[in-house]
Image 1 (cartoon, rainbow, N blue to C red):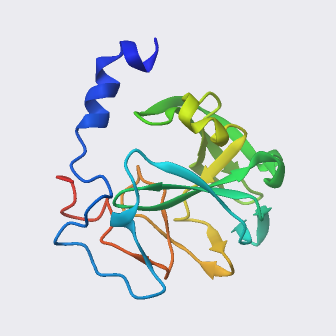
Image 2 (tube, one colour; image 1 turned 45 degrees about the vertical axis):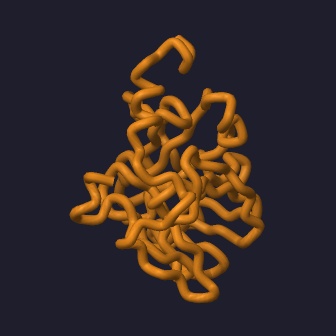
Length: 185
């Protein structure tokens, strides 16, 4: 079924109040070298990010790239998608089940299998994204919570809430979707 035939997708897309064209009163004013997540658009956009991006777990290098894509969406820190070619996929195991994004389509999840432990559902991908997000095909995003994820050498913090996968760095001003009290956004 295409998006045009699915009223649920259209309804979900229309439900978002903030769209990046005006900062709400509760938005934190960014410093001169910061980006406000409230200036990011809705619908989201994908942009290339040439900075070095790495992912480590238990001292092992999981991913290393200068070809990351970041998805910018109103109210959320960027989600970084790394090319599969730059990820050690031998450490990943597919998980059954999917979730749905009204913008990107169905996400498939991955567990990281390390020598001493497993980190369940630590990454996701969109193998068949909607046409507007076809650039995300052959890319993987990681939840940074249990990982050492870095952008330009800076260690990132994970976005609050288990569902969200944004990477928070010093260059961002929020508040960020997923924090307590943000459910009405």
